[in-house]
Length: 221
Image (cartoon, rainbow, N blue to C red; front, side, top):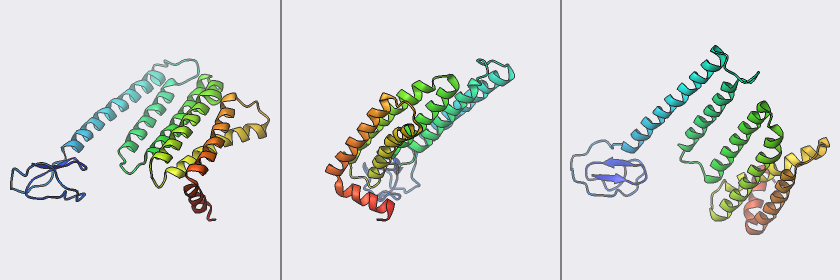
């Protein structure tokens, strides 16, 4: 039986191309009787996703029950709410991974923003706000900037540049906000600012036309 390497389906009959994506089929026909494609891989993915969804929802229910029904908590902190927030974010991220039209830059930026938001919320309620906001999050931004810069140079993806420019803006804004408010600026955010400027200059040098085109499109210049 022939199969499509892109759609992950098996196709019977004498078809030479996939009925979905029209790419060439691999393998031998074997059976001349045509029938509907069998999406075995997608069925397995569906079963695994439903299984993990059941486990995640069960964990949330157990945690909320222990916290609110049996009053098992640490002081005034309802740990089950933070756990539920992390689990829901995990499910959201898992669903995003099933979207095949996502570019690596978009996946990376989305997950970093989601993780940074969760860390800030968790740090605020657990007393680790200074560590989270002043060290962990800025270093995450630095890593994302460098990774997106490499992806922009290595891949010709239409939307890669916009995510890189957005990351550069996010790397500069916290420094400006802290400067305007007269707050002490953590060293990590200063390093993030320097990295943002260097990467912007590098983008202009190596991908100047793409940077200019993206700015013109976004600001209608």
